[in-house]
Amino acid sequence: MTRLLHWAMALILVWQFAGMGLRLILGRTPLMAFWVGTHQSIGAILLVLILLRLLWAWSNRDRRPAQERTWAGKAAFAGHCALYGLLLVVPALAFLRALGNGRGFAFFGHPVVARSGVRIEWMAAPADLLHSKLAWLLLALILGHVAMALVHHFVWRDGVLSRMIGRARRLGGPDPRLAR
Ligand code: HEM
Ligand code: HEM
Image (cartoon, rainbow, N blue to C red; front, side, top):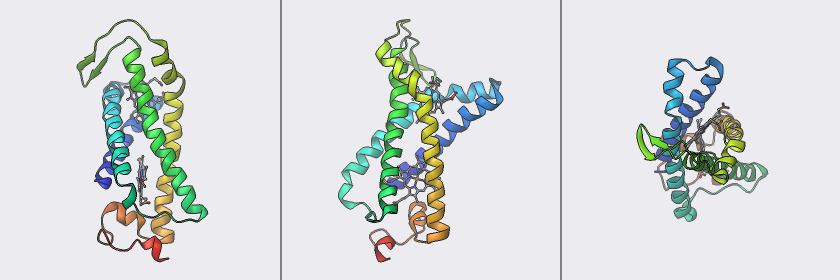
């Protein structure tokens, strides 16, 4: 379940960032209009997935792989907390704005909130200020995260990436990081 949620979210995030990044580079072409047109609905799916993922992580808090007590282990923990935080805040602020900006919200063309024409400032303003900035910060953290996953695999060779991909020791076996 952890892997399914991790890789499903990774795929969706690639879609979100590639769409927004290419739109900045290519401008409003018809392809980009389609791609960016899915941004709000896909983002709403991501919001549900991160809520599920946080619930899942919380309900398994006593069965999670041990984190090393070195500076690297503490940095990894802090990095994962920052990732979780931004994964929640970035879509949540945008979703709040979509509910409160008066333009209505449709999920893949199906109206969920009708257009009211009334903008509710406290719902819309935080995302206007922070959504895109925090989203690009999230991308920077993700790139650092991927780089560290590759360091684990190719430099430290400790099986952390293999465990996340699924070719590692059987679940329930000893944690390779504890053996070192
Ligand atoms: C984790 C999920 C999401 C990611 C990674 C993400 C990412 C981004 C990024 C990188 C931008 C900036 C584009 C630029 O700099 O021009 C952006 C803009 C935007 N996003 Fe999202 N987004 C997510 C979820 C959502 C959701 C759930 C909604 C609405 C329901 C939404 C609505 C918008 C809108 C309307 C804009 C353009 C206005 C602005 O820059 O604030 N996004 N998003
Ligand atoms: C693209 C968006 C991605 C996001 C948002 C993301 C987020 C996360 C988070 C929050 C965790 C912490 C899991 C936990 O301990 O609760 C994690 C674990 C992990 N991620 Fe990612 N990840 C992404 C992509 C990737 C990619 C592309 C790779 C591989 C190249 C990767 C490799 C790993 C590995 C190996 C772990 C396990 C760490 C451990 O077992 O302690 N991730 N990811």
